[in-house]
Length: 400
Image 1 (tube, rainbow, N blue to C red):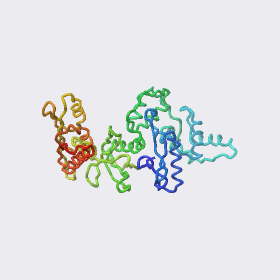
Image 2: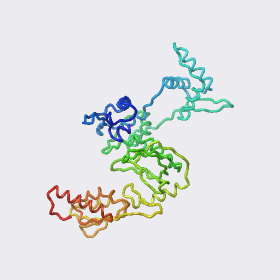
Image 3: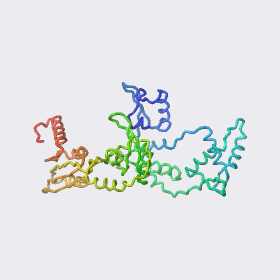
Image 4: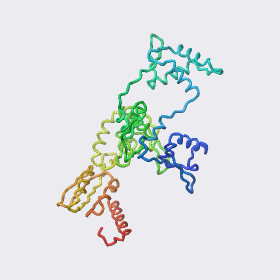
């Protein structure tokens, strides 16, 4: 699904994994999960598939269906139902030979019965123990097996409805929601960032690594060179934008001795290596750096020298435009707002990357009377863009 929805919608020619048969297999697999939301468009390059969702109609993230699907063999599904039919109650406690004997009795009723050896059954029981579905307890020298107790969930439908659509790893809430009897859904979302669901497994491993204060290896996809390379990181914090839903990992990279941001939708195959004693020190360093971060860019070189950039601009409002100043105060983040007179206010900030704040500054165009960046390249570019906009609207004579 990442190939289709994260790295760009693929036509048959652009999908280069294995054969064209694989393209059809993957497309059919995704269609079975997202059939109601998939659309197609014909372009000169071929037929492209994309997802189309009306948030007024869809109350739940459709990508969660991918986590609830599972491939299995005939043997897997046969053993699953027979084992849980044998161990139908937590009070039923059996040894491996006893379970194997009953499985053989079940299968003996078939004309061509499957045959399972003791090793296969042991591995299957071990798999269910790992998933907390079966409890394995030693009685003397013998391992005994029983079904785990069902957990009674309180009615948390509203909580789970909200959590599953908003929180990182919300798919956990979706699984729990499936066990709720009450199916009412009272929430609607104006900004519903559903594609982050595809990163739930990566995010869960990053949270685990941070809880264990461990160093990890992870594959990082670079769109610039279209290559994936493995990097060694100490994950420190997850940043999630409330404006676009994009998720970033802020992590220390030992090889470059810097704290960097990584887009989580470009990360895969997270492996936890070992705990590191530097986690608390590095997280505290990142916390201190946040006072100069407008977005997710953190620039501090190997000897801790900070390369900050100064940004200042002045806005002039009319007497009835106090809402502009309220917005300035509310959205200033790490900046400072200074009142110069009853209608003039100045914003100043020292940040790591001026380019991150420019989209926000643009929202005050027509009220900005003075603007200065210490990054002269970006200042010239900003003013050049304004001139070009004025030219487009026939306002060449206006002061810039």
